[in-house]
Length: 64
Image (cartoon, rainbow, N blue to C red):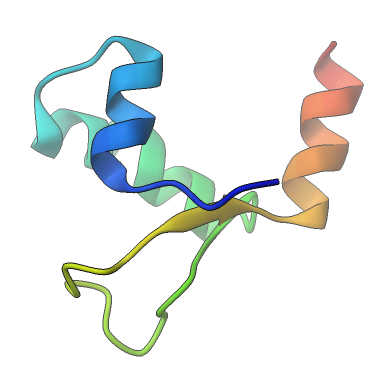
């Protein structure tokens, strides 16, 4: 699966408020190991992207 920027993820979900998206969706997904950062050592990098993990794929598949 392709890595996506924060903006791309928000657009796909139809959300526009970055703090709410991060607090309610992105951070919990990272904490549960469903999503990972491509540059974990620099979370605020302008080049930061996110990708689904194996655990995230399993959770997604199980909820389908």
